[in-house]
Image (tube, rainbow, N blue to C red; front, side):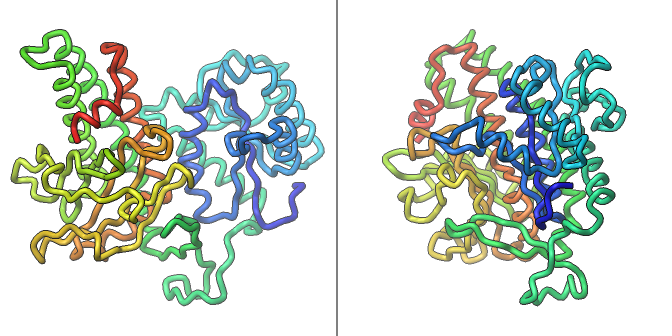
Length: 415
C-alpha cells in the first residue's frame, strides 16, 4: 500500500443524499479505532471556505482504504462515479489502496462497473438496509473490514504502547488509547482490559436500544397525531409540551433498560432559557415511585450555561467526558449524591451558541467504580448523537401534523 506511516487512512466516498448512512457507518467504524491507529476521512471534515475538490483529491491519493457507500444515489452521482471511483480504481490497480464496496441499498449492478468483481460488505453483499436494525449490518461490514486489515496490514497498524504507562492489565502487551474531550480539551485516555471486555455487550445493547426506540418513535408520533385531532380541552401548546415530555421519558426508560441498567443511574434532559440550564424531565433509580413523571424544573437549581455544568459541544463537535466536580453535585441527602459524568448538548437543536436541549447521564457515587468504563464507551461512540437523532426525527414527523411545530418554543413553554 502507498502509506508508509503508522496511521491507516480511510476515505469514504458517498452521495450527500446518503448522509444518514455515512453517519451510521462512522459509528461502527469507531470500534476499529480502539485497536488500530486509523484516520477516517470524509468531505464533512472540510472546513468552511476550503477548496472541496482539492481537499477531496488530496485525501483520496494518500488513502489506504477507500469505502464506497453504494446506493442508487451513489451510482447516479457524477462526482462519486467519474472522480472518486475512477481515481480509487486506478490507484487500486497500481497496488496503492484497497477499495471496498459497502452495500447500503439494493442497486442494479452491471458487470461494466469498475467495482463489480470486488468483494462487497456485508457478507454476500446483503444491503445494510435489509438488516433490522441497520446498525447490525454496519457492524457486520465493519467486522469484515477488520478481517481485511489483519490480513493486508498484519500488526503494522496496531496502536503502540506508551512507555510511561503503568497499566498492569496490559503488561507485556500494547496499551490502547481513545481520544475524548475532557475539561474542553482533547485528551489521550488509556483504557484497561475491563473496558475491552464490555465492548461486545455494549454493542448489542445499543442495537437493542435502537430497535426499541424505533418502535417508541412510531408510537409517540401516532399518539401526537391522534391527540392533535382531538385536543379534549387542551391547547396545542399544552399538547406539544405533554407529548415531548412523554417521548423524553421513553428515552430515559430505554436508556436505563438497555444501556446503563437502572440502579445507580440518573438520566435527565435540560432545556435552556435566559442563559441557564433548567431540568425538564429525569429518571433516577427509584423506579417504584412516579419518578419518571417528575418535573425536575422545580427540583434542579438553574445553573448558568457557561460555568461548567455542561461543556458546550457544538464548537468541538465531539462527545464530552466531564471531570467529577463536587461543587456541581445534586445537593440531596448524603446518600443521594449524583456525579455528573456524561453530558451531551444537541448540536443540531441549537440556536447560535445556545443549545435548545441537552441530555445528561449521571452515576451515584457508590456505583461510579462499576460504571466508569461504560461511560467511557458511551462518550467514545457519541451515544448522545444517537439520542439526538431520534429527537430530531420525532420533531420532523410531528411537524407534518402541526406545521407550526417548533422545538425551541416548546422547550421555552416547559421551562
